[in-house]
Length: 148
Length: 452
Image (cartoon, rainbow over all chains, first blue to last red; front, top):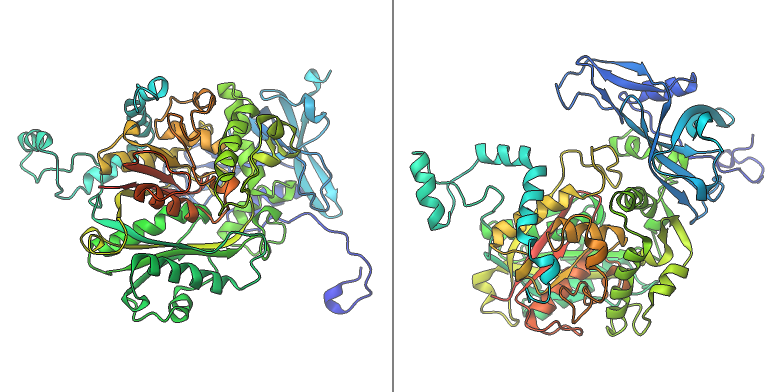
């Protein structure tokens, strides 16, 4: 791979997706994704929280463990991105806010459904995909029983 | 006035109260604990004294002591363009000098500045540039356009407490020619800061732009209240109609129809091009001093009847997707409650409002949070010219950020000053009180300016 910053050949560099900033609070989530698991923080008091944070807003405990989610949920809201076209994304690009059956909400890509057929309330299931070499991300697609 | 706004105004004040109280309970409880002796209304004094031997509380835990203590006495602005051709620092100096000249004040009389954390021009550079003197107060307000009226809050607090005598608030930016916000945050380096970690929940999927962050909330709003994109279009049409007769507006003489709105291309479905404000180069500055001193200055004072900031308990930066309900703007409800209670006013007392319009859907939500209409009813409220000049509540008579320019809300404060003075190019008749709001979807702010 040529690296322009090291004076390599002027070959076009394919744009990559923006990578998340990994902190001590969220590293477990992205490590879980790399292993194919959708993990959400579960506080010592039992409450789930996402996006993750250092402490429980309800009981103030800093103690928590990662809990694996079923990946099943419903579309709570969604958008279809059209403009500006930012590489490497392909457009139209549907993105959903999904409410997991366990409760937490999560933003991720929506695949396997035409933009005009997306509906709030539709059941979806999470899959973890390698969207570019070395990068795995969660995404949702319509749950089997509702495909038509 | 109330007759013209009959439909929505009837239950307006009551609505604002109940909505804000419901959402703001924790704040209220905390404030009560910290309540200091204030200036309660007479009727309340007796009741409070009867209950307790402690000093009487203020009439409302949401009321501050800043009511009518300060005034905006000068406004200045550059032209609004897509390529200013000069530095942001120069734009800032031009606007600040313009505002001081408007007030009849010398730069050496300024002893404080407030700007946005997103502004690239430190106040010491502005002060040196305009030939100012020693500074006793300087601050920045965070959270993008949510800072707009917050700058005036900082200035008013400094002036009311004697920390400073004359404070200038400004925003200067080559947003279009130098640093487009609409381009999104794809270049943000993933250093593990708290704010970068926040964007990490959206950027990897391509949810990269302010329009997209608002659109995800807007879709849910549409779902819950049955609003269509035409409701958003009424906001665009009103703002562009007003801009069309404002020579300072970028879209001067270029009104649009609802059909134009519906035919404009998708940016982020459900938002079209004409739901999105402009990207602009320009600067605006306003001068704040005491109400007492304002009486001796050149212009009719625009009294700061109330000014407040607000952030909700589950506040996020543009992506408040995790609260039980995401179809309101609780931070703006909190601002509204503080403004009404501090000023002793309600929706029927306002003749025109400058409602922050970076994207049209949140204009509807703000009308609801302020109690100008019921929750979920803004889709009807904005119809039939009701938010246009001549309607029950004309909004953004300068054209707003959709029509005049996007100066992060600062141009809206300047317009409110003109409306109070009676010198606006699209003057609303008999203006006594004007509401101004700041950026939405973020920690925000608002103010009420009054003629007396």
